Amino acid sequence: MDEKTKKLVTMAMLCAISYVVMYIGRFPLIPAVGFLTYDPKDVIIAIGGFLYGPLEAFLISLIVSLIEMITVSDTELTGMMMNVLSTCSFACTASFIYKKMRTIRGAIIGLVSGCAVMAAVMLLWNYLITPIYLGQPRERIAEMLLPAFLPFNLIKGGLNAAITIFLYKPVVKALRAAGLVPESRGAGTTAKRTISVGAMILAAAILVTCVVTVLVFQGVI
Image 1 (cartoon, rainbow, N blue to C red):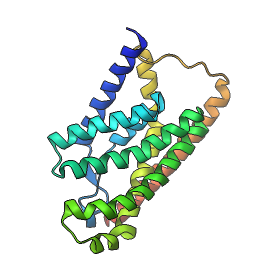
Image 2: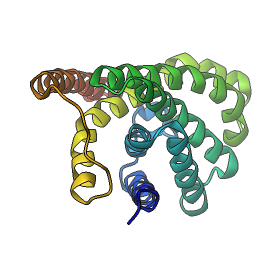
Image 3: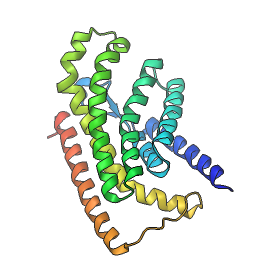
Image 4: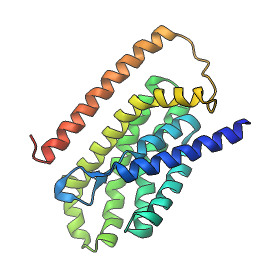
């Protein structure tokens, strides 16, 4: 199997996994706005972007969002467009930065930047597009931007970033074991291990913070 075929097979697998985790892993983060649901498909798409680049992250996002629109979504083209905008603002930003800085530090900077860009981008597009498919006046949506949409996207981005840090290495190892991704040629194993431990601690802190915040919003604590 040549490298182009391996890449296509891997991207197809990532599309399939993204769709499955979207289908079975969707849940509301903020009960007061139940239409804002979280699913972990952006994590898989970000991993694809880290492997291949921002263009491939965009293509995976487009394919998964199209299949989602056809099969389970009731928001049609507007919902698909919002899905692509949200996912790409996170995954394409993160993978673009990681492509320029292929280190743990680059990955963290990329993921944090992806969170910030997604939160900013979705404030604009929620204001412009959400009134259309919810059938609500724009003034009503504008009132929800800071108390609902902004925390939702920040929590969503934090969860995506933390889970991506946890899953990227195991996923890449599995793909390498299957012969779909070539071995890395990095050096400095001890230093890398130390940085990886630090990244895991950071990811755990972000994940715990996001989970506690969700529990607060849901009135559990």
